[in-house]
Each structure stands twice: as C-alpha cells, then as structure tokens.
Amino acid sequence: MNKIYIPEGYKPCLDAYDTQRAIAYIKETFQEEFAKALNLKRVSAPLFVTESSGLNDNLNGYERAVSFDIPAVGADAQVVHSLAKWKRLALKRYHFTIGNGLYTDMNAIRRDEDLDNIHSIYVDQWDWEKVITRENRNSEYLKLIVRAIVRAICDTNDRLHVRFPQLRTELCREVSFITSQALEDLYPDLKTGSEREKTYVKEHRTACIMQIGRKLRSGRPHDGRAPDYDDWNLNCDIFFWDEILGRALEISSMGIRVDSESLDRQLTESGCDDRRTLPFHQMLLNDELPLTIGGGIGQSRLCMLMMGCCHIGEVQASVWDHATVKECEKAGIRLL
Image (cartoon, rainbow, N blue to C red):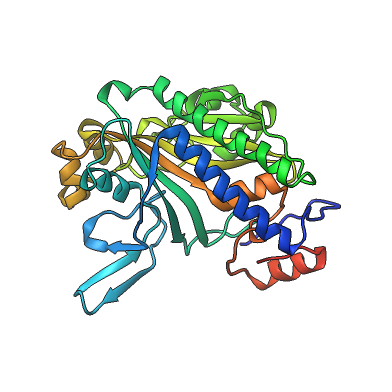
C-alpha cells in the first residue's frame, strides 16, 4: 500500500523555476566534488543488459526486473536495477588501474517498489566503482571512503547555501560507524532494521551501518543484499537524519566487492549456487576481474535532503498513484 506523509505546516522553500536550478546545481557540484575525492572518471553506461549475462543486480532477491525481447538480437533484455556488476566488468574492459575508478548516471525502473515519500519506481543515482588492492579489503579502508563521500556531500551542501540562502539544511560531517549486529545488540527491543536505523541516526545525525546481508543472532538479516556483489563483511549503508520527515534517510549503499572466496561462500549461504555458471560469476570465481569497491548514491534523495523537500516527487519526474497526487495538490506540493 502506498503511503504519503506531509509534515504539518510544510511549504516548499523554492518556486518551480528555482527548484530546477537547485537540482542542476546539486548534481553538477556533487559530481565534481566526489569524482575528485575518489579519483573517478565519468563513463557511459547501459540502460539494459541481456538476461543471460547475469549482469543485472538482484537487489534484495525478490524484485522483478522489467524484461522485454529484442527480435533483432534474438535475446531477452532487462532494464537494469543497478550497475553493480556491470561497473566491475567495465573497469577490466577499459583497463582502469589500481587507485582509479569510474562513475556514471544510472537510471532504473523498480516496478515492485512500495511508493512513499522517499521511494519511486524511477531510480536515478550515481553508480561508481574503483579498483583497489587486496590490502585495501578491510573495514578501515571502507571507512576512509565513506568519510570522503560524506565530506563531498557536506561540501556540496555548503556551496548550495551560498547559491540559495533560503535553503537551510544542516548536515553533520562526523560519521558514526556501527555494525548491523552491534546495532541489534544496542536496541534489543526494536524488531526491525529500519526501526534501529531511525533511532540510531536520530541520535548521531550521520551514520554508517556496516556488515549488511548475513543473518544476525536474532535469525534475521538487518536488510537484504544480493550475494554476488558486496562482501557482506565489508559493506555498508550511509544515512543522514532528515529533519523535515523526521527519519533516517539512506543516501548510499556501497561496499568492498566480493572476491572469489567471499562469492563462493555467499552463493552457498544464500542458496544461489545456480549462478555459478553465469559468465560474470565464472570470471569472479576464476579471479579474472579486478578487486573493487563501489556503490550507488541517490541523486533525487540527495536533492530532496539538501533542498528540504518532503517528497521525492518534488525533485524527480515519475508516475504516482491518484491518492498521492491529490494529497500533494491539496498541500500545495508540486510533483514534477
């Protein structure tokens, strides 16, 4: 069921014209900041991949991809859910070296998404991937990259305030790190990962929750993760506290990617051994792809956070149910 929450007294900070200007400024500025911080080069990326390649992202394992046949090719294709696997293959194909990486605009359709203030069937994010060494495969390196991303976000926000003084979102630069198991231990009475996220991020303002995918001592995972891109011991989600919505807002899901050993273990653990025969997975199991770190950063979520918007439809064009459209019209909220 689709749900919408409109805070009491909420009014957009910018008119329609300045909203578009601010969206463009955030995207242009953040790209510049984070590409420089992580040493990334922009590349072109696909909107769809063949189903047989195994390159599409399985996300939490239950979302259906948008599929269609291509008669001229004699194959079925899927609109990407993300580019997690494609990026790693691209780093090899384009001969990226250690310490260098790529980023791209990723546009996806997630048809099974439950729509609310921060979820849309249209996904727009910066997907990025960087070649690392085996020695970089540790939590300290993961934290180093997380801090660099948060710094780029906060620097962008500061520059936005100069351009649009009427925007007043304040972001905390200090990142609090915690593992999903430590989070469960900290709040034993909270039954879901999202409840624990909200409580922790409300207190710490900017947080990074690590080690997501494996079952916790409660018998349930903090959240779902496909077994074939992130190493579940070396991944994380980055959250900021959204003052307008009064909730933890996930801006990025990222991690150090699986090597042959962790892929082998996670495929078995998740009951996905059938993927071993797919071309991409064969390359990983045979150590034919570079070791990498990567992730996605939500473009519309970053915009709505910095611009103080209460609904993601204020900063992206998508399709919404009738009740959401009417409720927003009643509250004076412009959906693009």
